[in-house]
Length: 246
Image 1 (tube, rainbow, N blue to C red):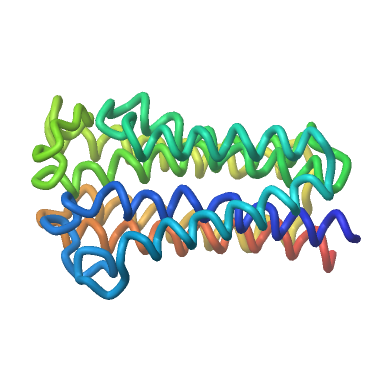
Image 2 (cartoon, rainbow, N blue to C red):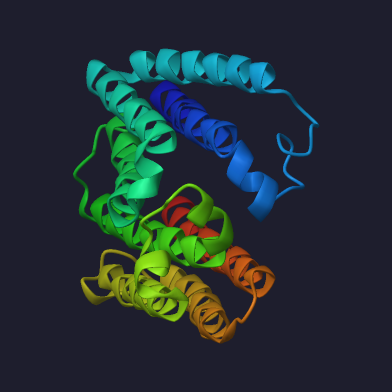
């Protein structure tokens, strides 16, 4: 039970630095793409962001160390990947997108380590789903942020191949997530409770994908991405509820 708690703390706090540093390194781009965010809006200062990064990193690494040496090593690697991505590799486009998605997928493995079963087939399935979903989101988000990304010479798919092409690739990835979500049912790893909830999740994701493909403005696209995250959240809840209560 202690490891479960440390796993939650570790996952939460070791993911936070990448998100915080993203805003730190993107402050100039966000002045164009998202001027209302705390840093470009002047609500908080860069030194505060650095201090917060140090604090959450420390908490995350301590929690990881309480789980095991392997968990600590993975967390250090995840932190380094997050830092390098935000510092230099974001402009690489698809390689950077893949790095972020791998980090997201690895958090599921980290959760498996926390409970002593990192290679559980269901954990691995959801890890793959998380990778594909996040990769789709990264590519879609790049398609919405072309204007600002051009300022930093990004090599995103949207800039190199066009917005519509990027959204098609993104949509294919989201559809793969929907297909893979049925694997636990096909192999009878999870039961009817999971199926009922994952169907709702998949419908939300599918409808959001349709809207995403039809979006014409950055605002519409970002709204669709938020809906996609709601669908993903419901998918995660379906797994948790099916395991805890059924």
